[in-house]
Every structure is written in C-alpha cells, then in structure tokens.
Length: 213
Length: 213
DNA sequence: AAATAAATTAAACAGTTGTTGAAATAATTT
DNA sequence: AAATTATTTCAACAACTGTTTAATTTATTT
Image (cartoon, rainbow over all chains, first blue to last red; front, side, top):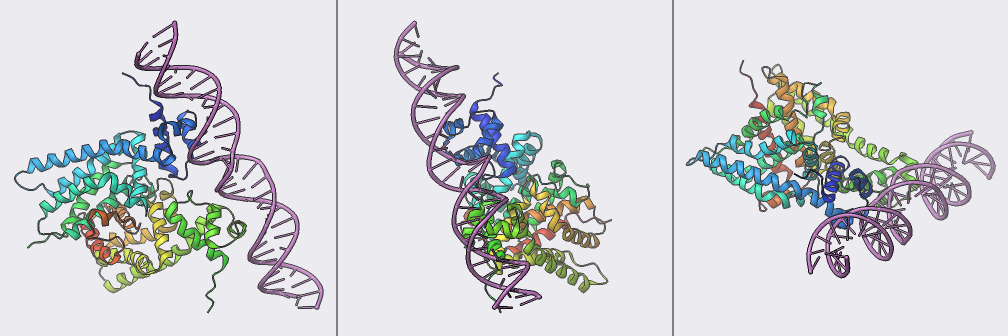
C-alpha cells in the first residue's frame, strides 16, 4: 500500500485547509504550495489557474458524498415499500453522511464542509457551485419527501428544503458561536448532539406543511 | 435636508457592496475607493486599517437592527401578559425586522445581510463577530422562548436557535439556488413568501422539543 | 480677514499577487 | 542503453496589495 501522497493531493489538501479558513481570495498560491511543501509553479502545472484548484477541491469529495447519500435514500425507500419512506428517515438519509464525515472523517473533511458552508451562503457562488454539485441529489430527496407528503404544495416543500439546507450548513460550518451563546452547554464540534436534534427539528418543520386533504 | 453623502458614508456604502460579493480578502481598498469615487488615502484617513472599515460596515446597521428587534420582542411580551408570549410571535419578532429590511430597505441593506450570512457561516469569524454584535439580543430571545416552553431543556433550545439562525441567514444570503432547484417556482428575492413559511417551520421545529412535564 | 483645523490629493513605499518560461531532474517507454 | 515523456526547480514578469508621507486645498473658528 502506498501511503505517500501525490503532489496533486498535497496541493489539494493544503488548498482545502486554507480555503476553509480564509476563503478563495484570502489564500495565495504561494501560501498553498508552502503549506504543501511544494514549489509554487507546480500549482499551475497540475491544475492551471487558481480557480481550477478550487474546483478540484470541490469535486474531490462531492462525488464520494453524493454516492453515500443516494445509497442511504434508496435503502430507506426500499425498506418502506410498498409504503412511502417515513419523513424522518429521509431527513436522516440527507444529513447522516454529511455530519458523520464531518465528525469522524478527519480534518480534511472538516475543512471541506467549512468551505461548503461558506459557498452555500455566498450570494453569487451559492447559486452556481451548489447547484452544480448538489442539485441532482437535492431533487431526488425532494421527490422522496413529496411521495411521503402527497397532499402538500411543492412550493412549501422547496422552502422547507431551503431551511433545512441553511440549518445544516451552519451546523458544519464549525463556528463556535453556539458554545459562547450557551455558556458552554452546547459545542459545535459535538455533531452527534446536533444530529440527534436536527432530524426531529426539521421533520417537525416539514410536517407543519402536511396537507390533510 | 442634506442629501449629499459624507465621504465616510460613500466609503462604507462602496465597501458594503463589494464585501457582500467578494468577501473581505476579495476586495482591495483601491476598489472600494474607486467605487466610492474617492481618493485611496481617504480610507485610512477616516477609518485606519482595512479591518476597521469592515468593522464600521458591520456596526452601522447592527445598531438599528437590534433596536427594532428588541422593540418587537418587548411588544409581543407585553401584549401577552400575564401569560408568556406565544412562540410563533417570538419567532416572528426575531425574523421580521431582518427580512423586512432585506426586502424593502434598498440595496445597502441587501448587501449588509449578504455579509452577515457569510460571516455567520465562517468557521472563525462566525464565533467572534456574530457573538460580538448579536449575542446579547439572541440571549433575550432564547430567554423569551424558555419562558413560553418552561418544561424544555436548555440544551435543546440552544440547538433549535442554532437551526433557526442557519435557516434565516441562508434565506437572506440572496443565493438564487432555490430558484434553480424549484424550476422557477420559488424565488429567493421573494422574502414575503419565505417569511410566511419560515415562522411556522421554525415554530414547529421548536415545539418538537416541548416537554409535557 | 487672519489663523487654525479638517479634509483631500498625488506620489511613493516595500511586499505580495497569479502566472509563465527555460533549464534541470526523474520516470517511463522504446 | 537510448529516447521520450513527465515532473520539478528557480528566476522573473508586470500588476496590484495596504499603508504612509508631505503638500495642497477646503472649512471652521477666532
């Protein structure tokens, strides 16, 4: 087994770590290559422009994530057949892989999610990058929710998804604001505690738009 | 009435607009002063360092906002006396001023909220800047919620507040992702539509943690 | 109107930015 | 072993970074 990392991965790891803290414009190519222990020219040799490094960082983990999440969704749909999958299981399938990777996947994953949180809340990039990497998956989840809440209006459910997305990304942004605010009662790093509460919170939110007709 | 803006405000307006789009590091002082139609040296003459410009941008509107929101909270508490204020009114008091200003307050307010959304989801700044400007107010709201949900556990309520914060900031980040995702059914700019749904969604989320004891 | 203070301007500082080119080394193929 | 391709290094490019200085103009006070 080869544990030595390729130059490409060294650069991506360093870029990921630094982008998470200071954003795209807050990090220079020299800072990235210094962190990676590599010559600055290698960044453009392997990736091209700075923006291409960023795109490569995004893509690397998105594929893994989407595969896992679709798998979990399919599983819970299959288990429930011929009934529609229970709402709380759909929400769990949507969030579980994210929080689990962020929690136990190592520093790289943590950085990656911090970047996602920033992108998701960015006025320009949010509508482009998130759409590009995560919309196909989001559509599958919303379809599953519609199947289990057949009377509800599509517009309501899209907004509910929006709230879910916001609550989720703030959660793995990694800010410790919740720690300060709660006087140490809650810790942002404790993602098990979040997940325990996020799923019932979001489920109840969706159910407020259940249509009895 | 004097409609000519001071140099300070010209700089703050330009900085606000640019920071919203490209973040702190993505904007140079020369870009700000060019946008403001003003000499670059005036930025440091009036504000000092670049970071001080950013802080001034943050502070300018936070004060207005906090005054309005506390006023709304106090009103709904007074109306309900001697009972505790209804949960959905507390949530509305928390969100109304934000969405209303973002909706009808002009471009400056929109930019301001886009910055807030980014800061709130930033791993380092979120725990510092948001705490500094908005935690005193957040504590008042959580106290009001505790009063109306006396049996609930504090830890649960802090997490619920966290989810509210995430859903809310994504909403006024201004990303058009929801438009793409819904195939034009929803529009991020339509903040009235959001508010109509945000309050019942969040209220139901909180109520999932109501303790019947 | 003279004196003082505040605001604005233009020029310059040393350091950093993303990116490229040519030369040198390493790995792979013939 | 020779030839070819892939990778790495070092140096350099013009453009831009935040900030400061001193000179000049405008506004306020005496």
